[in-house]
Image (cartoon, rainbow, N blue to C red):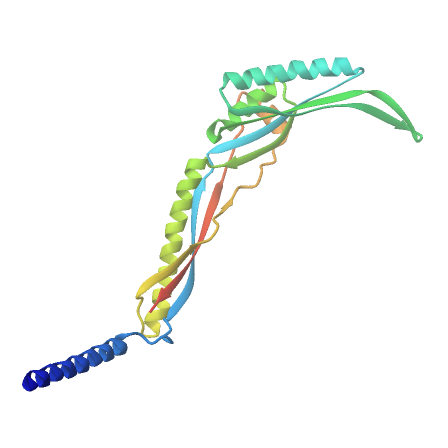
Length: 244
């Protein structure tokens, strides 16, 4: 009995020592709570340029006359002619953007005298770039008297695809910068621990200023007015946190 008690006691001592050793090993393997991950923050930029494929155009029809009724009828007649033509060409986003009717005054020796009325109707629409010159020449023939603006852009699908390409270029730029910095210092990239995609920017071409006389002259000789739409740039920026 005494011998059995001694054996049990020895076993308990061995188990206690073993548990202490295991606990010590686990404690030594646990990372130091004060350990700081070495990391590098780097930003990358990517730019994708795409040709403008669409033209957003705003035109006006204006008329002057002695009475408001006379002027309204004339503007309505010209506007109907213009919109009928545009509908026949199946242009996109055709809409009236404004109508104005105002009295006209003449000033003589400081005295104001009403001499009639002036009315205008504004219409906007969208066409493919390659059709812009020919359609504008015909719009002038149909009765348009004012070209307010022509703004070129790519389609939403084209812009979205360009945005993806710009982000891919920004990713590559950020990784290449990180590699250059770390390799020069004798380090290497371990992993990317944080990624931030910043807002992408779309730079649209400036509105084109084209006078009515240019379209009128081209329409008179039966030629199409040349239009250069230009490009627009999509810019993307990303920021990486990289451990090394």
